[in-house]
Image (cartoon, rainbow, N blue to C red):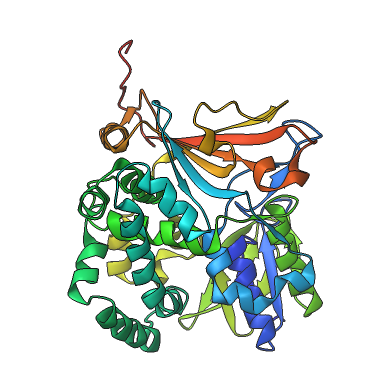
Length: 404
């Protein structure tokens, strides 16, 4: 009987399994798919010579995570790779905002949009450096982050106090307008806020856009060398080196509860797998509380809250095997791993508004990934393994295009 059964071999499940194994627990992970990794995997389905990340691709939060750093995954084969530039946001007129891991390069890019914006960027980085360590500790500490929260509060006081707190709550459009005279800095902030589906006018979008942009400035948007699945593979190898086990193709259909404790799981094959100490679930909230755990074991308030659960917008993604580099008209986009494609902050607002109305956007904001630019092992020399994704409504009410 393992101490813990983990449902799902996505990154969260595999990290949890590794941490429990480090604590001396015996761990068994059950994954419904035939391969581990969840949304962190790659294949060669587009072309045998090209590696394509199936879902996620760039990992700034993983690079910044003290939890992942503590796992020392480089000892289990994980290597990170970076594009020459982190991110670019080109405009149709040829201008291009570029985020670099070099502060001065980023500042020069923004200074080209408006005099003084380079210094404005340096000021933002100074604030970030004052709060970075306690902020990341708070983000990666189990809730509630009491000690990390206290350290963060002290750092915030030293970095501007209420002014910084206000900044984090601002809509990203307003934050960009307050901090930058030109469009370059505003584009970097707003485009990164859209990574979390936060519209430029949404409260709190400024804080998220600022965080993602600063993570890119400090840690870049790295990719696992060889494909995103190498991150999952390193987690699996580490777990197995500590005695943990992983079984793929084992779909869990229910959690067995006795005396208000989860004591086992049932699989689609009819097996009951007992857990001596805990059951962990790396699945969605509706799947856990709406399918796996019988409702008679759940508080009524939880079930009421579950009815309010809202999924993010759906994602539409295309992968390409290109025979050469993308011929960007904006030179700064050629060396970036991630490219934001939208002609200005107003275009981002328009896109987000159409989504909120249930319309398929007519000019979608696209995130474009140049994977061979970020990792030269992804395709033959002189070619590019690329993808782009955008969002569409989960339930389509109409089409924003003129043709209906």
